[in-house]
Image 1: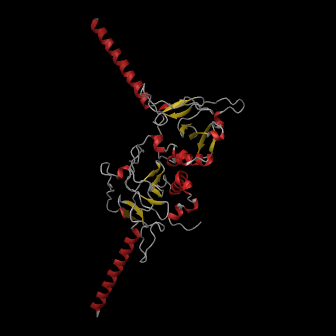
Image 2: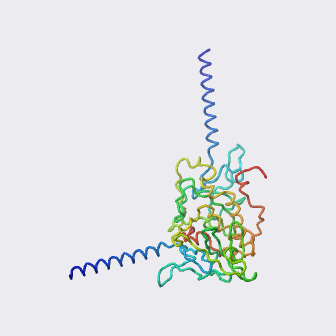
Image 3: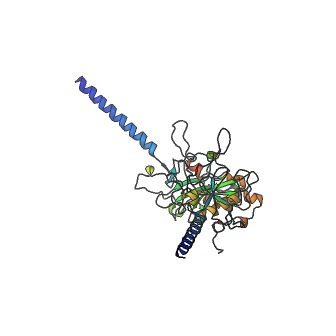
Length: 195
Length: 186
């Protein structure tokens, strides 16, 4: 009787541990690698990765190429190792600013505050001879990186979105008849409650 | 006697050579140029705003003065009053008259020059006076402080104020172009 009870307790304890561990893992998986360049896609954003039937956050696209069409825009994606030569200090892992992506009739464009709006992808992700993708080599632990890059005090998300949306409207959106109110705000991408 | 003379000549030669080296390195280290008539600082470190002269090989400002009638060959240009502000400069589009404009993150877009650089009675320039070696002041980091947002914000403000077309907006310099960073796209 006593042995049985002990066994039962051990099984219960193990199950609790497993369940707890699983939940921790789920809670910490903030990013998934998006082919073909392995850019990090935010699983923590409900608009970019809504929960599927089983409750798992699932990216709204399966790849991020020149021809990808985003169902909502802007979408945020991140290269945690990006280094721009000449920009003072090199970014260390997890500190580079994220990019914002928008649709245009000629393909996907991406915005950052230093380079403005440009056609996707950047030169360093493309093999100069073959044109084949040059994916980022992600280090273990990339999926657990914090949801907001450490440089956000400098590259504040609210400014990034406001400036990205303004730049897109001025460069393409107004001519294409894109409604400014259709563009996601930082609050919507970060899943903040309505104001 | 002859040896002493040779020694003196050698020492003089070395001194002149060292002085030449010092002057050259100082000229190379110079990051800013004084721009008349207000003595605001013009960035010699920006290849887009101070391209190298084909004759001297030295960075040379695109304009020789910054008055209200100056026309910028490229825009935005940037200028700095180290005691107060960092500005982005634009031309007023011909449809809206003419004249230089400056953007500052607190006051927005306004006609050049700022009031503090102009005598309120006569309108004559009040040039900035420097207590430091202005030429050697370091070039700002493209992402330092709020610099990352300054140019895109200034460009968007200018484009929205004057209803720029897509092509006109896309012709405005980005921070990467002003700072001379390598291209991001193939």
